[in-house]
Amino acid sequence: MINYLKESTFAVNDVIRKAWSIMTKHYFSIATLCFLMFITASASSLMAFFIKDVSRVLSFFMVIIFTMLYFTLNLSLFKYIFHLIDNEDEDVTIVGTLPTRQQIIRFLIATLYFIGCILFIGLILFPVLYVLDPVLRYLVQIGWVESFQATGVIITQIAVGIGILALFITWLRISFFPFFIIDKNVPPFESIKLSLAITKGNFTKILLLLLVLGGGYLIYLLFNFLHWPFVAFVVNILSSFIIVPLSSVALTVAYRKIASEYKGDEHPDILHNIV
Image 1 (cartoon, rainbow, N blue to C red):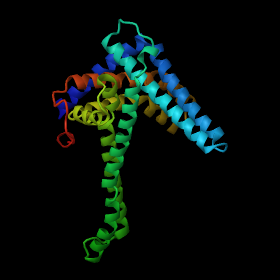
Image 2: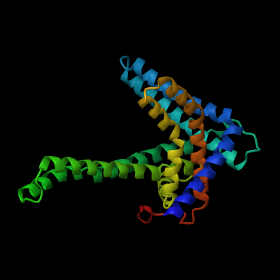
Image 3: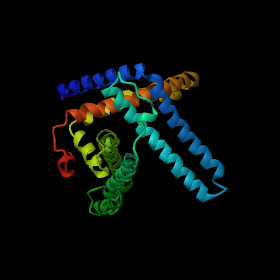
Image 4: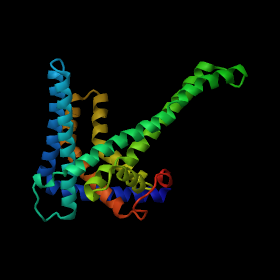
């Protein structure tokens, strides 16, 4: 286990090192795309606030338009980073990295599959909470459990914790699907299965990478907790201008690394890649 953690740490260091090198060389292009995504999300929220009482139909269409624009920019960012990884010396404009209509459609369908997988896991796990109540009452009646309330609270907390953990693991393991659509132009459900396949055995590395990338936000929360607002504000600004672009590059580099090391089936099934 210790050797495995060492190998995972070294792998994360390699990803961060390469991502940092790419980001520093092409910072303004990457940061521009990230900024455009931020502006799109902010404009969508403001637009929804101002026209919510004017027309719900118009509000709905504006949400669709801004969502499509945001996803297009997000996919363009990944496509641009792929170009930098593969052909860093060859110039390319941001317009040249726009995803095709087919890729956008496949991404939207895959996103629905992604949400469906999360909801499916939730539907399987959370009904357990409703089964716990009659089971605990029966255990109290037969004398196996003395305090229904105290024991129920503990077991419920454990069950909720397990449910949230399962949802997080599911989210993390299938969240690489956009990269397959942009990089290999695979169909929607196939991208979900491939994401599940390549993350098998790489969960610790991906988790460590997310912890490193989320370190800036954790430091921001720490300073907020310590009631140091000015320091927290500075950390938040640095995080927004450095960690956000770096995260996009690092996740793309991580995908390319684990995808290149994948030796499994080109059309994997789900059951053999769950654990």
